[in-house]
Length: 368
Image (tube, rainbow, N blue to C red; front, side, top):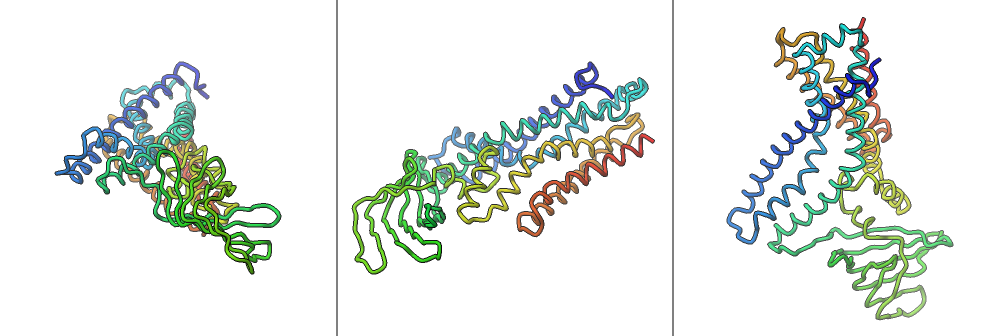
């Protein structure tokens, strides 16, 4: 079997990466063009929106869309690489030299695996940051305020263990981020014991979150059988932090791969459902392997002894149609996983295993 660091293996790896970058650049340019047309249509007649703001918005929105189509980018770029091998008869020469089909596929598979690893480990966190920026810019567009920063108007519910069997249920009616300081309004904290009996209730008009504490203001503390205690301020220790609260209001797709494990652990201890976050985390782990499965699918349609015999259009249509079918089925299975009808690991890994197994069976049949 050909080694990836051999001359031919290095050539295949180089072609795979260059084709991926080329297709990625084309797709990004097309996406940005349509997004720019859409945002120009939305902001027509508004003189408070600069061209620089629009360009920044389009760039911030780009990773969200590209992340959804990266399997197709890999598939198309691989099909181009394989088609060129066949068209120039390089594939025939490679096979005539005694190299098996796996000798051709292994360097490409390893290159795509590394692309997937870089995508998850490096580009995914960057995309998460840009998603947050896009949300802010969307709010600024809707409010006509270039300096507005909406954090959330959906409220917050958090459950925390306080030790000795005490559990605190924290509710805030509104959250807003100003100058990197999180403001919470209409706060209610209910502390209950192991038997779910209320020990005390704390209410405050406003609070800020700083260094693991909530600085409550205009505070009222209620205890059974006692008169309400009124305080100007109160520091209340909490396990909450800005990043975790942010994650509570963003889709799992907008959370960095490296932050997802802490987010999942935090939600589990807070009593929230973590199925969507688990699905996202497992999907990112499986992404490099899913991209490899797409390479196997691409090779079935594009690795032929001689493409000059025709059928290039049929190859493209068949390959893309199969890719869409694989993607659609994986999304359907993923939906079952998100709704907890099937285990998360099953929903993520079974489509990858099935696609890879069927593709390998086809290659083995061709080799025979």
